[in-house]
Amino acid sequence: MQASFVGPMAASMAGNDPTISKQKDPSVYDIIADPVLKKNLWASCFVWLLSAFNFYLITFYLKNIPGSVYLNSVLFALADMCAFLSSGIILKFFKIHQGLTLSYGLSMIGGCCYLVFYKSDLPWVIPVLLCVRVGGAMSFNIGYVSVARLFPTRFVATVFGLVNLVANFFTIAAPMVAEMGEPIPFVWFVCNTIFG
Image (cartoon, rainbow, N blue to C red; front, side, top):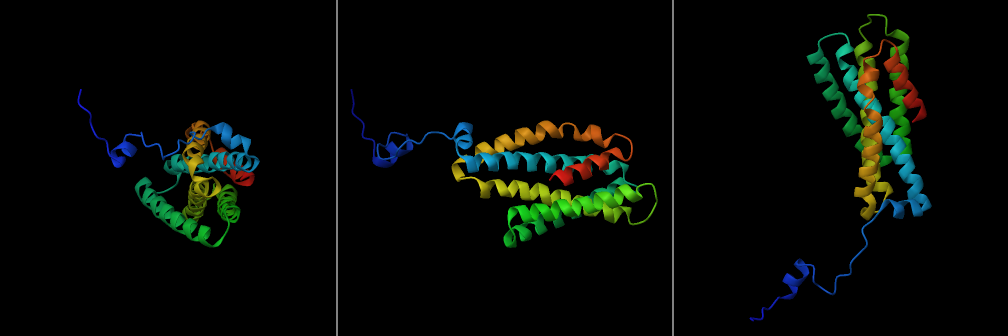
């Protein structure tokens, strides 16, 4: 039998280095055991649920907006870029809850304006819907970024998985709500922004 030499670097790469302590993998139970993390988890799940539902509701509703679906898609993409840029700037200067309040407020104002005037063929229906889209995309992005700020690094992947699971489970209904008759989709949208 031939003896082989394993250097310290090879030992650490193979996971055999005795100087490296093994940490327990983070679990949901560790998050729930801490009252602050538990509260943050519930809040994050709720924010992701409402934001994701509204984001996808408006996306599926796009085909019902008057005008060219292609032009409206381009306008939505520009609105998303503005929303993601502005949400980053807002989070730089304000707290998470202030940014969410601003984004939900913008969405709610646009949604209420649309509910009041959806039957008319006014030319400003598109700008109102872009306001709705900007607010919805901002809240979606702020919810995404806030997870990394609200939880220690070792829990972030677990929390992302949990909030995605919760949000996607409820977002399954977004296309069905978007296909309901007027004004039901925007009643749902405004209700979600009120609860947010």
